[in-house]
Length: 233
Image (cartoon, rainbow, N blue to C red; front, side, top):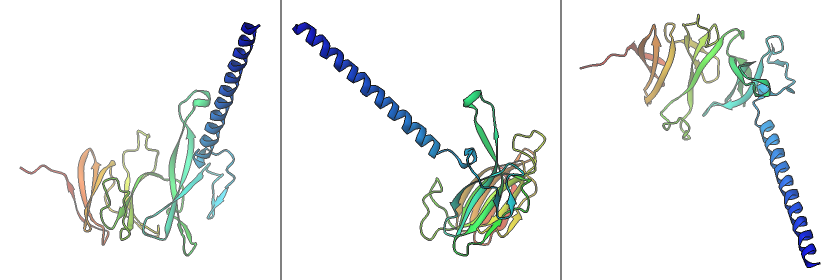
């Protein structure tokens, strides 16, 4: 009798253990599905219903608006207008990428909104924030007296992977999006940047395969020099 009783309770404990394990696994699965849906980018959200933004019809060009990001030290926030498309993948593992087609600037105080470009035909390949003085090495440790004075970006007429597109326009855009100006002849690509001090912001770029360095004055947004990078002996 004792042996049968022990076997009975042994099986009971085993079943309880399996039941608890199943509950724990279901809980983890539910948590994963919940967080993965909550952190999914807006352009992947199939339920997004925004069709018109600041006079632009997003449905016509299959465009979606991403979340807004603060432009540090200003009253402006900015959002990327993107065109999502599927890339290589099999079944449910297919991935997506986006092309930024325009920028929407919004003034948090005046509630004014403006598009950077009048149309959404161009492709914004890359853009950086230029502060009035250097931040830390990663560009995140902004102090109270540091503010973004402009955005540096390259704009193309075709997607970045288009082999026929080898020229891009380098633009300097004011922090409120009201002004933009070309600061160089057409280039191949931006290579890097270095904020020296409050009067010097270096921009490294390639043109026709040759590396150039442009020295921008952040206080006036004027180009101080633009030349081929050479080694001095």
